[in-house]
Image (cartoon, helix red, strand yellow):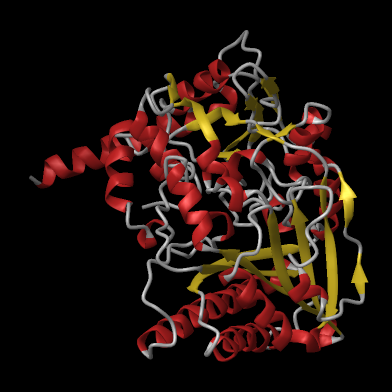
Length: 494
């Protein structure tokens, strides 16, 4: 038995050496049209600078592969199937979690050349490549009077956004972005190309709507095209001392959602040792002007800036790019809470806000730190619309209204990574403890509270919070029995 074990160990080591020696970057078949860039090529350096977080750009892939078709993605996966290299896939590069779309030493597959935007007016669909950003999609659709359910900031990439669910300004009308996919073109771990839809590989179709990168590489999304004209939107900015009124208005807006064409993101920001202390709202209305009372709860508080106006959807998303803070390391995390009722709303939401402020103040000594929390309404209406459009892996019920909270820290120096990792963990775990405590005391209703994948921190257990995790695992075992995506690339895993 001992000799047999030694033999197996030697064989494993030899196999690992062979696999490592046969790296993906040097094994792409000759004559392939796949573009390959290595450092210090300008395109390589440009790609590395094109992350929202410098923490991701600091990781250096062995090469960057630029496939232009599903067939070329399949060719890359055939090579990966013969070695043991870790790899990553990059769409827009907006996720700040290291190793999700960034890598040290292995191949990075960029979807930059998978950038089609094709509108089919006859069937009212738009075929969208994952290499686009949402501003690219909306620019291509200008003049067509249609849109798709997509991101709220133009610079966000298509690929990861949809696979994480995708919360949109249009979600109160149409559900998550993932609920608006007619079909996915997917390259599986065994390098076969399939179409996942309601009638073809329906189990794969269902898990891709919120299942992340655990099942294959999506090379095209066919999306529902919705009628679209001019929209209204922009920002309201308030001083930090307006917190009680802002939180009360948020609570009432979420419960009594005034108009399904309306959308908001309500953020609080602290920076410069507290010298910058603001509330910044992103407002949207699907029409040239909102009815008078839709946003009245907020405008009555008295913003000192109001740049909302009528514009094209493309112009609004491009304008929202001002909020992207590049040139810094940043972290992102999330938590979901049931909406408190009007009686206890001030206490509960005030406790959340205080916890965020206190945690942020504890890292004021970190160079360039900016703390942000975004409150994103998730009324029952969105859960119903998601169900009506075929559901998704998150499987929200409409028993309660919810708020999704997004927590962001940006800072200048990687030497502060450990300190900011600790603060991020304290922030989301402390928020979870508050929610649990208020539920136990009866201040909050008991509810199913999955995490929103697009806002998740790499340490958070996205799949563990889903009530569909058994289904998700069974589909993964069917389509990736060798665990290529489970073990050898980044992202949330079961």
